[in-house]
Structure formats: C-alpha cells, structure tokens
Length: 517
Image (cartoon, rainbow, N blue to C red; front, side, top):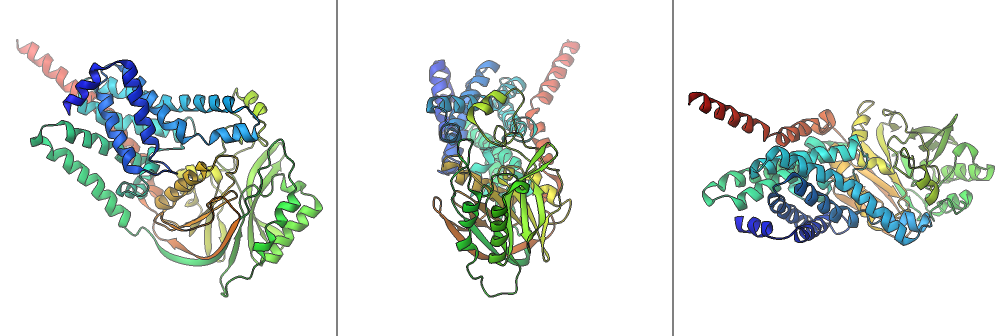
C-alpha cells in the first residue's frame, strides 16, 4: 500500500484535486436517496491515503476542502429548488448559491485536515487519528456550535450498519467518530507490515462489535398506545409570490380526517403537517377559524397543526393542539432555519432577493412542556429541529416522552431532501430509543420504531394518509440522553491532540541525550 501513496505523491496538484473531488462525490453516495453506505466508507478510507500523500499543512487543507465540495454539492443540490422555483432566481444564480454554500461548509473539513497535519506532522499514524478527532470536532462546530447546519453529518451515512449502534451511547457525533476511527484503523491495516496487522484488525472488531451489541440492546420497553392518524395532503407551497387560501387548504384535510376510527377505547391524535396554515393563527379569518374547529370536531380527535403566533414584535413558528374547540397545547420552534426563518447578520439583502416569508422569527424557549394525551407524553420536533439531538434531550428535563413527532413541510426543496430528512429523524429515534412519527406535507411521512427501523411510510409524492395504533416506549434514558455527545467529543479531542504528547517525550529524550554527551 505504500506504493499507492508513492504514486499519489508523484502526481500533480491537478491530479490530486481531481482525486479529492472524486472521493468526495463517492462519499456523498452514502447518504439518502442513494444510501450506498459501504461505498462511502471505502471512499473515506481512500481519502486517508490521499491525505497521507500531502506533507504540508496547506496541501492537506486543500484536499480536505475539495473533498468537501464533492461531498456537499450533490448532497445539498436540493437547496437550488427553493432559490429557483420559489425564490424566482435564475437557475444559474441558484447554482452559484449552492456552490458558495458548499464552499463555506467545506472550510470545516479543510481545517480538520490542516490541524491534523500540524499536530501529526509526518507521522502517518498520529496524523490519521488526529484527523479522526479534528474532523468530529469540526462537525460539532458545523452542526451545533458555529454554523448551526449539521445536514449530511457523516454519521447519517451509517444508518443501517453496526456503527449506528453507537448512537444511543453518544449520538450522531459518536457514530461519526467511529466511522473515522474505523477508516483510520483500516488504513493502518492495509499499510502496515503483515506481522503488525492484528492490532488495527482487533481495533476494527472492537468498534464494529460494540456497535452491533449496542444496536441489538433493548434500550426501552413498551408503554401506552395511542391511535394516530397521519394526513399527508401535498398542498402547494405558499411563498412570497402566491396567496394562501387557508379555508381551502383546511377543507382538503376533511375527507381523511372524518373517516371512521378503529374500534378501541384509546385516545386519538390527528397529525397534520407544517404548512397547512401559513399565517398568524390569531389573525385567521372567521371562516378559516370555523373550518379549523370543524376539522377537530369532525375528526373526533385531538388535532395537531402548525401556524405562527405573535407576542409583541416577536413571531414564533408554533405547533398547536386543538381539543374540544380550543387550543389545549402549544410549542414554539427552538431551532430555526438559517435564511428561511431567521436572517444571519449581514444577509438581509439575500433574503429580500429570494422572497422567503416570515424570515425573522424568534426561537422558542429551550425547555418547554411536552404534549400529554392521557398517560402518554409526546415530544414534538418542528421540521429542521430533527437535526438536533440536544432538542430531543431537552424533553427529559420535563418528562420522559413515550414517542416523538416530527412535523414538516419540505415542499420548498427537491425530492432528495425528503429521504435525507427522514434519515435524520431515524437517528433521533435511535439516540433516544423512542418511536417516532414523521408527518410531512410533501411526501414520505413515516412511522419509525425505537430502533430507527421504518415500520410504515406513505407515498413519496402524492396525497396519502394512514391510521395506526402507535405503541410508545419508556425506560431509563440512553447514555446519550443522560450525558449527550460530550464524552465522545472529549475522546475526539484526545485523538486530535495525540501527536503532541509523543513529540514532547521525544524532545525530552533528545535533551537528555544531549546532556549526557
């Protein structure tokens, strides 16, 4: 395998750039809708060979940046739909917007590669494990700390593999760390002499073995059951250039809402997606408010719907629950979409250009009461919030939820976003060991069990509905719910800095040798 590195070293920067871009493209296939997870893992292992062929910090950063472009451009191509179709920008401008977004996100793997080369120097093993550590820390910065855009976290490319068993232990960051540690170990096994291969092979067996054991472990057990009806209406998107007929949109739900329920004495909950009501609930016309109340009455169930509410000058994206003609519960969205629901500093001109409505919302309180239906407690995530494991963890600060709901409207984007969004919902179910129901306006609404397995889905493109008895789950919080990702982030930090300590010892030995002379 040293011949591979030597071959790479002999070739030009153009060849290296092309290889990094190609490996990034292959890595992107591990995410939905393709889901070629083992191909993506192989591309990551190959990237380690490419990384080891670069000895300078600048060159290492460059291969990380180009790899990121190959990873993010196809994976986030759905963002062009919102800019071109609903923002009415030319497709060329939308493509430029996608490229700029990919450039910003690619800075994070570039920094990871540069830092790994700086701390690992020319010692390949140290540099590789430093790369694993720094990459996870940069993903944390991208997802939770700085950019607040954790889409396409590497951990989501391991959903149906043994490595996903690390999710209940430390969330998607733990899974990401184990993906990179595994890639580093496999690189080590392919690169070292045969008599030393047992070390990295043993490490791989441990990583995958612990993941499989954790994946098979029963982290929760059955609790109460609700009858849940999911309505997926596939309504047209309401943007700055269209006017919503709220009455007609609500009336489109009535045929499915008033169908007979299964015979049982269980509580009933009707789920509608985000985007049916597109204005302030307090300013609904009399006819629209009457239609909304009629929907609840005809359905003979509690009704979840989304809308906006206002307090003074503050506007919130809010989930409401109707019960017997009044709003019995509400929850404000905590994590808002950059450029969709709030405007990053200095970017007001861009939002005005693409015409996204309600672009200055206020985030809700970090901890809010759960929805309670009888003895069942339910945690609600509004669309983009399913990226954030910490939002799910906050539910336990009030009460242990029996299951989770994700309500969303993804019609702003291309079809590929729908399966990516569902993949992240599945990860939240695995991390928390709780079943989850995803109701989406534009397709692929689904029921997911506490192991993240899809039990049932609706159509990916057309109106659909389902009524299911949903069995909740209870039990002690998973390690991730108790401690978050922090133990694994600390482990990533130790790996990132692993090159420091041996070098210090080497310097001390050299100093002693000089003194003895």
